[in-house]
Length: 216
Image (tube, rainbow, N blue to C red; front, side, top):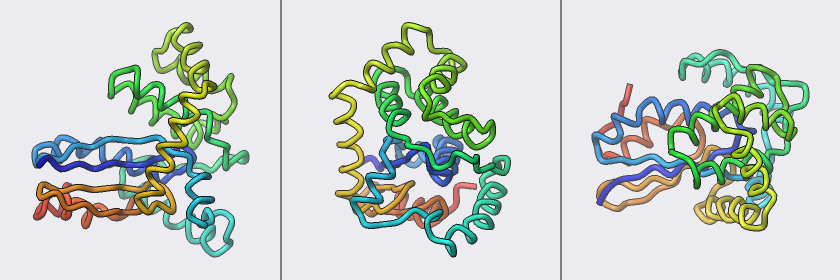
């Protein structure tokens, strides 16, 4: 049985960004061991409400710790230090719905690089990607035509893709999610386990490949 890592991520979550960078970087190594990776856009706010969790920035102790943890994570994952914009956190519903449409209708690479751009625009450029006009500019800069952008926004406002985001979020909750990134991992023997956070890769890769404990 082929292995798989289902990654449930939200553009409002910097740790989802680290996870996406890491898994894309190591996709070839994972594939060589029969492990596929798939990213699923979810609404982190819905996961927090559904699980009873609170985001780190609402708890002073967690917020203070996150500053140190984020700096260490950026060094480990080889990305520039992120900058939390004044407008953070955003309501990520519209960008996440858009990404579900992009995932369904465009090649995987375009979906994933556009998803990365959401984090990069917000955390490095300080642009509020929850604003439709800024989101449209992001899509344009990532090679989408004006007509495609219209289709993306129309779809994101439709019942189909509203429900799709709800369904993805509920799927994560059904798998025990209480934050993002959330991973559901199946190894070659069919064993499945959940993982939370962007600092679990040694154990995550061990479970997914049985003995393959270090990708770096």
